Image 1 (cartoon, rainbow, N blue to C red):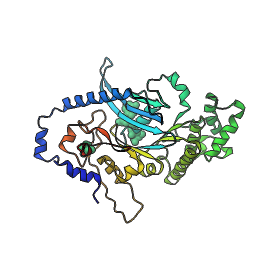
Image 2 (image 1 turned 90 degrees about the vertical axis):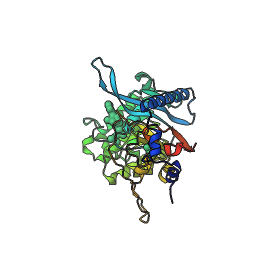
Image 3 (image 1 turned 90 degrees about the horizontal axis):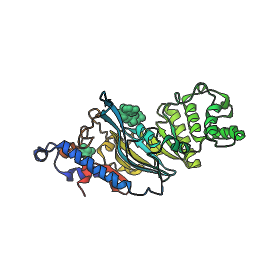
Image 4 (image 1 turned 45 degrees about the vertical axis):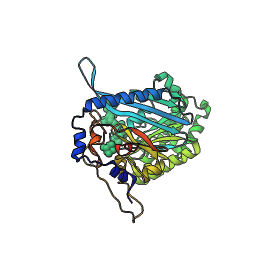
Length: 378
Ligand SMILES: Nc1ncnc2c1ncn2[C@@H]1O[C@H](COP(=O)(O)OP(=O)(O)OP(=O)(O)O)[C@@H](O)[C@H]1O
Ligand code: SF4
Ligand SMILES: [Mg+2]
């Protein structure tokens, strides 16, 4: 059966090779179009700024941008910006997990860190519990730090080597005065127990543990301050495959018992499929598709999502894998292609794609995508 994208593709008509299509764009001014698109995007962001935050969302990110200055003049003026996160919007409800996927360098980590204000956003709004924290100063963020935590990929470098497990886990409890001093040890031991860490580990040092155990210590450390939102940045990719499942199951169990909300960053689509309720697909700093896990896996709209997910092994041996291999390297986010950023690698690219950026739109309830194959419909 042909999928929706293929049907739309046919309806979309002219291919890039078509001379008629090429003629349409022969005198096209890409720079002028890019400037016009930027104005339209800025106007949309400005209009969205006036909207109240969604009262049901724990986290609502609107038009988030994080640009890094990568080239400056001798007077310090930036001449080249690297657009690590470029106009990303997403909502996260309490108790759910959103998986963020995409190839290396597409901006997943930068997005997670910017949401937590570990990086100052270049532009955009970040509503946490209904308050826009995007412009909050470090002092304003301090009381929120306990509610927003991060678990990193590398459990080896993220634990101080000279502190005992007890010392590492007690420190944030003391600093944030989570419980009275005389209750700290019992409180920490209880969290260790929930994370599958034995009592006697309290006196031990991180170097005495395996990667999986260290990641449990990192998870326990994040939990000591009673967080609501945890950004999990590739939390299992440094671990052995056999240990990965244990850590993922631990994260799932903790979510159920503690009502945690996860932004789960990973390039491992099988892991993301297992843990996520919704999935966001990033390419070169932009969210190209977003939807429920079921929609993204069964009806991916964007050609990039289709290619990415075609590589996920199917447990049913009767289902033939139809892998789409993307050609070419990922362009630099400091100099992204004009039009659709994916057009240089897209197997379905048309002439229009290299000139005009597709709009990110909702095509079915909760299912968003940015691709000209679909925008021709409305
Ligand atoms: N502090 C920084 N200064 C300049 N550029 C940066 C900085 N941090 C990240 N970048 C660039 O931003 C882009 C996105 O990087 P990021 O680490 O967010 O990607 P990622 O999707 O997490 O990749 P990976 O899967 O490899 O972890 C990359 O081009 C990266 O080189
Ligand atoms: S808009 Fe982008 S993703 Fe869609 S067909 Fe064109 S190049 Fe491919
Ligand atoms: Mg990363």
